[in-house]
Length: 359
Image (tube, rainbow, N blue to C red; front, side, top):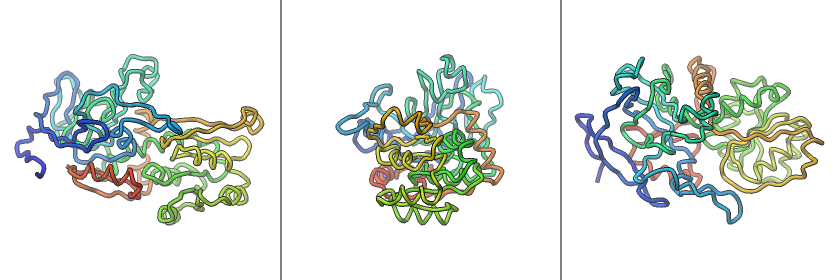
């Protein structure tokens, strides 16, 4: 059966998670009326992220035979999807500044507003988060409820699909690279992994850093795409000589970003570092890594993890992109009904770039 029709814009149609590790199902309810500062956004595009795969499965892999259960904190049926762009359709009486018909990207990493992290502007690190598509119903739907207009960002003249993808993959890459800026001023950065976030990272690094970055990726098609997108060099992490080749070309990199987050990807990133270098990890594939503690002071190295990015960083990133300084990444558009097929393709490594669902 095809998706339900919505001629009068009163139906909220979702591709819903009804049980973990099972296919999404279509559900239909009424579009809610916003109260207070709430805003209802009619979704035009929603990106599909690898973390959506983990949430559907119900766990993240921590290492051999170790999993982090993530089934708590949400009621089923639940709507995944956190890379959202759309049009304001309904506004609450206190939603100051929100205008019906305004095209907006939605910052989804919403916090409680009262904890120390939120008070410092780190809503993405909130102790009681309200992240859209993670703890609160998200964007695999026709509509989404946003608690306040401050989370709605102008994105013109960018395409809606690209603006949506920027809200996670773009923001994750931007926030990570921002933490490497001082180190990347010394020479080319190394970007490990060229999935959706890694390709965003390559585009942003071209705009943010003085040197074109190096990349490491097991898929030869993605390596070729990276070279065409301006990478200074591309290496195969499965090649035992890759680390030595990077060291020979650079003398050791001072900045590396691990967009994979596995034991092997981190091993390559750290192995390619010069003394005083820094690795930022954004990937969530999983695994365990061990190194002698003495190596931290002996190599003066830094390992830092990041989790998406702040609201002010989202504004900074969009400003950079809206100014035409960030080359667009490959984006495939599919209908909302293809949400499950897209999750399966991501799970099996069949996507280059980013897939965005359209409603």
